[in-house]
Length: 482
Image 1 (tube, rainbow, N blue to C red):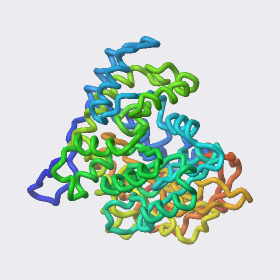
Image 2: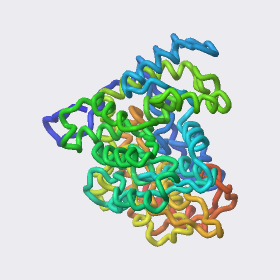
Image 3: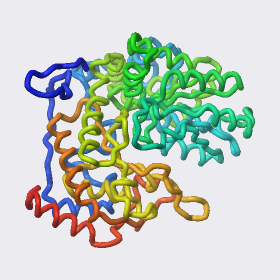
């Protein structure tokens, strides 16, 4: 986004697009929200979208398409095999990433499944800067283990460090020495790191890590799902890249890796996913998984209409004016709340604004899910649906005890090109009110707890009557219909 100067006030974020299609929103009265939260088992994933005012659960599959993306969908070739739509998408990805072989899949999780299924054997180790829930679950399900080797500074919630997603090369070398290079299934770098606040990884760090891995014969894999935001930070925070275009930086990053995969629900503004590889032999090794689990090689479980839109979306991702709105809005939200004393993860990263729930509700023990409690309270006090990113998102230890998360956060995702500045200000206002009443928030406990990925479908209940008391305090300040 260019710097737009204002005559009579300080600089504020400026959208570089206009709205052409709208969707009506509804703010349910506070007591109705309490009833909906109980019905959902205090799990924001289980809420109906019609009961939500501001949906900040995720940026996955909920981004706004451009007019050019929507118009491109009309020319989709729906042939089962040999679709020209696929070849247009493949050509665009090859142009941007420099990788000829593209395997489509219905979303990024499917890509993770295929990569893990092919490369991970029982006892193997996968090195990551940091995991996302599904990437780790696919590895552990197959008997492998994940070593998260992000630099210690990446877990410090409040700082000014520009690249908190960087992997610690000393830890990487020690891990390879201990495990043996032959036992490392692959090195996976996530740009940027979802579970520690959307924090980016620098190009220089990716370069050092991949060069070392290749010297040891270790496969290098990039999760490019959040690459769009990471590219903005590479461009604006990395001195050596300031004179490079987004397209140039993208190609420089892509050239470092053997395999790249992504969720197009994030990267490309649409829905789908793909795995890209350099070597024809590896392409042929992986293609059977696509036809077995996803679909034919020229649709892979994706809608061809989405493919056409994504081909335009990938090109739009190369435009700094387009990809900068998310990080700039997030930065605005983070700075505003930080200035009010709300404990935020700083600096603002990609994906969303992240609240440090461990400090926000420091009276709630980790075993009662502070971030889960806070995200429920935020829906009660504003109709805002965020996402828990903490202990609730972990899986239990083999002995049944809780695996306490390194960081306990609430994510307020900013879907790309969706929210206005006034809606962002509303979120800031309600979070500030909730922080001033944080002592009223209590914990949660499970009623139904799935064995894996429990945060998606599990149900919980409050450990006391704190939701009722919080709602009454909210109504006292804002009225019955707010």
